[in-house]
Image: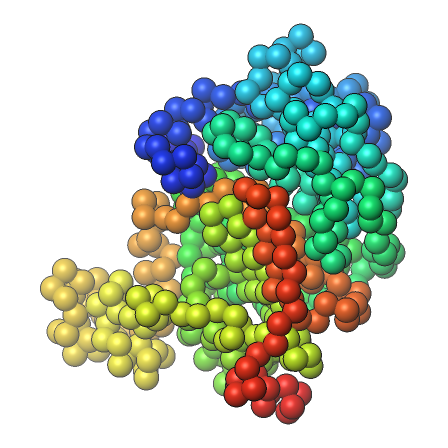
Length: 488
């Protein structure tokens, strides 16, 4: 796989204000060690943290080495599978020895031991709590207490550890002192302040929901949901196929799905516990199904990157909406329960006047007139559609017309087959997109478990400052969400 130009490289180049070529060389020259403490070999959460840390590091630095005690040697094959699925056959995670430790650019240790005088970040988790102790923060160990397995805390810990390694490679400021974060309340404190939180259900809870968008944050969501006690049905909507440019920030992306619809990747990841119905479709065209075969489920999880679509999702007025977003080194998750007075997406997110609507974008991509896309998406392409299109797009439209293709069918084909390997992608790093998905999964699990103490939420976390905020705001009195809340 040619990963010379990736979203993490672009994000890092913008952060340090250097060229992408400089950062690309820096990452390819670096060596990162991911280590598992011997005392943690038998804990499933620590193993989950280890594997996700390896996964994320491989998406911006190909030279990953691992150190595992003999009791955890079964993880070697899993690391090799991750390495080959991201970078191609033959790429493996090299086994390191203790004599090599001083040669690494950065070290991530999963456990409690701090490797002094080394660029080592230590992380661990207990239930819903994730902890991190950055390199140079002092002390001999990071506090840890046993708790029932919970992949939410484990995956969050991996994101925290990888973020510190990433910033260390770039010589950027990092979190100065050890801390822990609760994925229940999103409070941050010194390690040892919070209890591990409620146990996950023994029997699987049922989900009936939609996932809109299968990008980086949704990959993080699905990666965590796969490991939670959840079963049921999920409809997923995304218009694109997986491209090589997605590998840097999608923790579930692998070479086997390049060129295939992103919905297929998420469907297969969640199988068999969650039965997924994939819709490789434009969301606005997918909504046509509401008039015929579908109804809005009680829960919608959104992972899209434009405000127009996020507003459109909100205007379906599901009982519970979880919106996931990431930008730069900041993670954001918004939650709106229709029965609670919290801020909805209409009030929380302001649309940029320069942002294209879906029909403006589709018109530019396909040559179809805006009025036809808006008013007749299920009509057949006709001669007037061909004649009114830009000259360079008429041949494709004429072929579609001769096949008797519908406008929506041509749009779907355009989305899936004609946008591959786009070089105009947004910067993103795997620990931010994955962490956002972990928080989204935490909110999903709390909803499925019947927790009602966080029915509205505006959460943000900055990996650069190590600070978070969890606000509970309300909409303006004239917001349209209030009338729907009353009806609900």
